[in-house]
Image 1 (cartoon, helix red, strand yellow):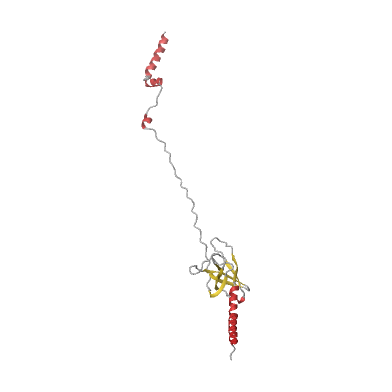
Image 2 (cartoon, one colour):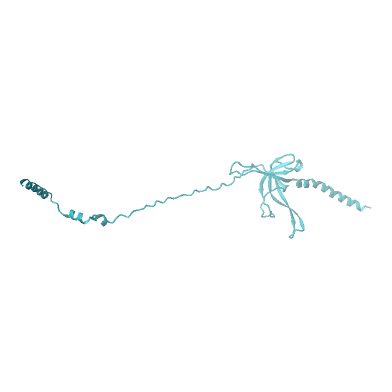
Length: 215
């Protein structure tokens, strides 16, 4: 006669064994979290700064150099009143490329941001501190990173000052005014019009002198 509790013990042993095998992978994903984000200061205006994401990860995380992983964000879902919690979801935000691995820290840079067309929307766009790292679906990318340059601002056009020369023309006097003689006073006008006989005047002076000598 078979004992019924033996089957239950075997079932529990199988469940416990599966949990032991799956627990390390789940714990590794949960422990890999972005703890800091840093940027450098550029020396040129048209140069885009580097943006490094520091991930808390130990040697057992499975991260490798040039590995592209996914950053996910945990969102707590509540009802419309906000009083009752419905559950939690992990929403993919973007992909990061691992550039360096240390004892307990891995450094990554942004590879691409995922479109919101087929994914739930986010209140804050972009990968940020507190996002988790998911290695499922990761791959190795050995291509060299391409630095983007900030678009240059269009040159400012200087204002052109146009000088307009205005010619001031003084009206010329009428032709009649130029040809008209200058008006003279009445006595001077009479003298100017009287004919002067110079020879007759000299003869009179000579006669008067002769007459005075005879006397």
